[in-house]
Image (cartoon, helix red, strand yellow):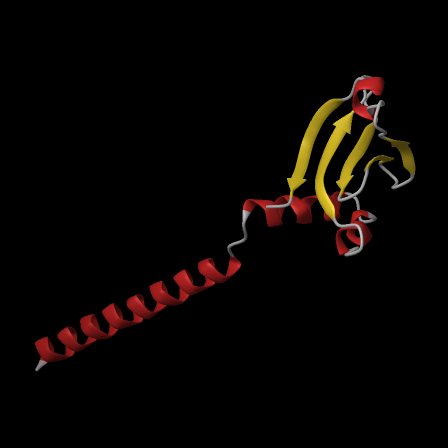
Length: 119
């Protein structure tokens, strides 16, 4: 009789453990995001003004790179469908690329840690 009780407890513990394992896997799958989504969210977290550019469907963002000047200032280089614009870290337009002019080359910028590209 005592052995039946112990076996019942073991079986109950086993099934409880299995259900816990399945529920944890479900949480992991639903929390999964692609690397591009994480990079995009990191950019929005670091530069809140970027959100309006990501939401613009008339001239969508194609790629974004955080750039650093030799003095340490951060700039955000945004490639839109129709243009390439460099913003300062506060979101003010700083420079616009043209056919014969590259902002990144002119200011001799180095890539920062954040980037995003439409996949």
